Length: 66
Length: 460
Image (cartoon, rainbow over all chains, first blue to last red):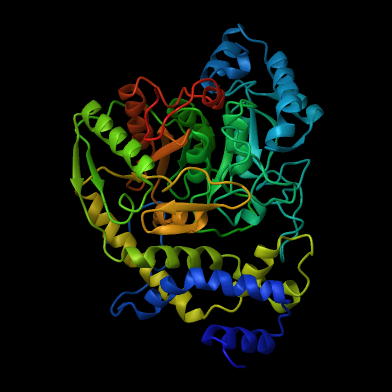
């Protein structure tokens, strides 16, 4: 579709693939919320996290085990 | 002055000494809810017979006979929670004995009603709920904050002296800040949580919203099931990260917090040091993804295609968006959490507290919850979340403390401490109250009408 953003294309395709129905208003909300999320999500996608592993069964009431 | 306007601890003390009749206090509380709630919409349900039954059976605990409210986020034996929504997608809610209910009951408290909340707990504003928005007692046209909107509006509006909220991404600290209250987000796992519809949450905690730190300590002790002893902090090192937490806050809020920080430093003979934490830009997206991962199992097409039409449009869209976010981002979010926790632990090796404005601007309008910051106009949710989510991502405690007024509305300083330092945070909050002669914790919404206040965090 002419003028369709990359996210809009992804959204339309993903909704169809996963069988999730969304009306025009809901799609507009999704687009608007993504515009807020996007900078942070891109930073997260591009961050250099090599060598960093998630904590296994972390006790979040305490600092991480050394 | 009505006994209802006494601090929580004073109500408890007077009941214990026989000076105050707990039955009369409960009746006065229910009457005040009747009188004031039509304006505030802070309370969505009362059950006088159940409350009186709790009072009759109240054990001789630290809160015996004291009326409190609980956010619509946990079940009670006679009422299922609704989470401020027509339904919670994929979850069947039923009455039951939740952890916060048991903690309150065992402390002798009387649950006088259920406090409103932002629909599904999904915003810092409190402007959307199945029951209609709660209103900020300081200005009924403004947001009370969310998602613990009802607890904050109720305490600030004098319906009760203490209420239990929940904080998954800042949801106790934002409304406390907007309504001029002291709100504690406990260290993860310390406060009663069981019975919550998110069974294995890694970000949400229950916590108190009260008028000052001593009351928050009393209510938190009940929720923790252990006393949080008061101390006299001295020589604390307070870390500040200027950018963006201070530099991108509204000038009036920043000034009020700067003044408070200096007052606190002087009161405790402490030291303010500039510190840095790497990867600040990753904290918010990581926190959002970790928090939503907890509910993601329910976000399947069958559920999403059957969302109640009574559910707000924003939540319908957001829930469907969440189901489509790449798993790789969530996996990376958990790595970021591990790194931030490690970096924060190292930071707390050299300091005792972190401090920055709890919210970057005072409560915006309910109709259009946007805020004006040095970086531009943005949604209150975006600005608030930036200030609040570090504590949820990492598990550390945080407290929001009223420190002044901007545009006649409360401004608040947030203090964060290392894991388990909940008592120290309340000690620091009390030190700040002493340093300011309780000027800001004793301000009431009615003061705004009777004494016009200029911007910049100072009363005239």
